View 1 (cartoon, helix red, strand yellow):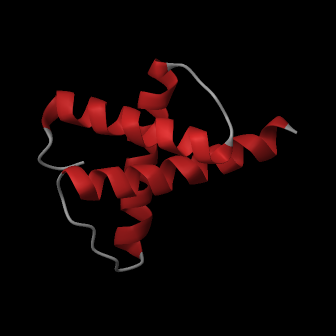
View 2 (cartoon, one colour; view 1 turned 90 degrees about the vertical axis):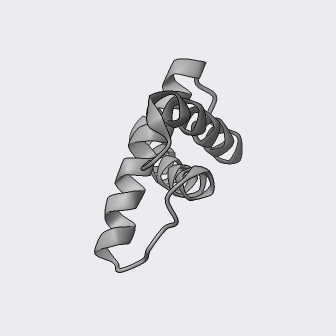
View 3 (cartoon, rainbow, N blue to C red; view 1 turned 60 degrees about the vertical axis):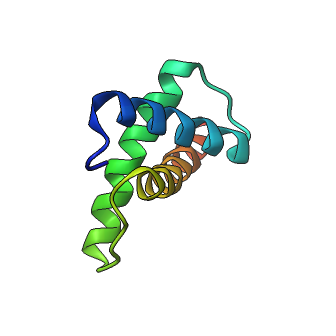
Length: 82
């Protein structure tokens, strides 16, 4: 999440992780939401860049890529849990 700084990344990552948790019906604590959102954003950013899809840097781009990546991580977590 470029250009957001440390605290911006934490806030946007937490929001993305929380939204993905609500959609995927998996509830975690605040700390795990932040971790899932930030890691998901990094994962989605790498995958989207590799696919040639450019994501706008900043709040909205970080939120969208964090949400997509967090959903992918939670989907894999749901498969592993079973």
